[in-house]
Length: 140
Image (cartoon, rainbow, N blue to C red; front, side, top):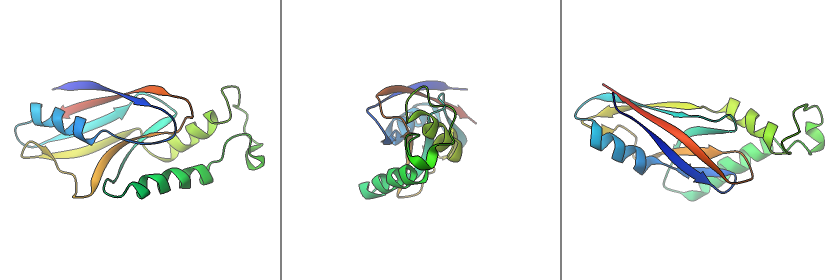
């Protein structure tokens, strides 16, 4: 069963589209029906299927999660114990726990069976740049 590791460079919080890379992988390996599993190998970012047409959706998602889980130096987060890796670290772990570290996408006729406006995103929750790894695994 084919598998690759995608490397996604991030420059800070936000959604990073990897739909085209996943589609290229599937197109090169699939010849019918199957299932693509995407798995991110980190605990402070996550994966999402989200709208890919309006960039405001990505900005609003990022802002929602910033408000839902503020940095550890926010007075509302004084209860946090894990603070040694910076004020964005523990909130990043919480955001990752609230979202997903893996996705499953059906493959139909050798193509991702995503909806018209759906895209695949790495959701970076940390402030500093990272090189993130996403394993793409295709099963039939």
